[in-house]
Amino acid sequence: MTHPYQVPQPPKRRTLRTVLIVVSVVVVLCCGGAGVGGFFLYKGVKGATDPARQAAESFVSHLEAGEPDAAYELLCGDTRGGYTREAFAQGVAKQPKIRGHKVDGVNVSSVNGRTSATVNMALTLDSGFTDRHTFMLVKEDGAWKVCGQPY
Image (cartoon, rainbow, N blue to C red; front, top):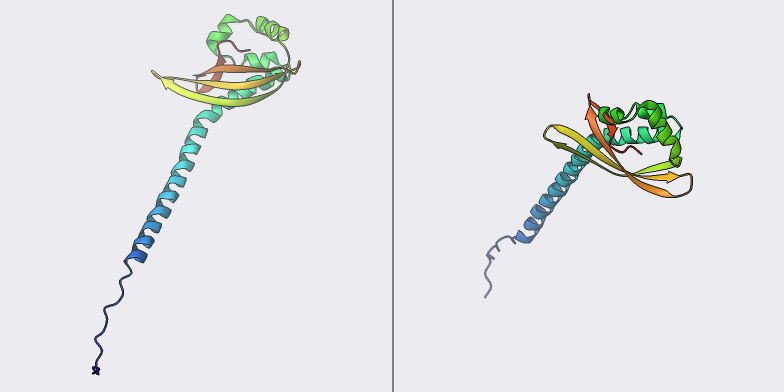
């Protein structure tokens, strides 16, 4: 015997679908947050290292162009104290001529209130040889200056 009334069935639960939607939203938000965070981290690091890189590249560009006086102006006070302008120009003249350069890495650090940087470069010399050189820089009066053994 059949009943004239059919007992209504409870609606199907879609728990799996709901869980998948929630998990998808969380994944999208996390990936977006990581992307935005990575972008700002990159911008922060680039902002900290770019001025030091530019100072070292400017120094090397002056040497490439045969402008030792302009390069001398980019030396820190301690290094300029060890070389007269003429002695620096003579020392540069005795070195192989730089024909090109490429920055391989920049590291900026601050220790005990003193900000310094190292800029690693591949210097292509007129002989065709590539010399790997690390330029030490310090911040003097708000500007990056090449220190130590300049070239």
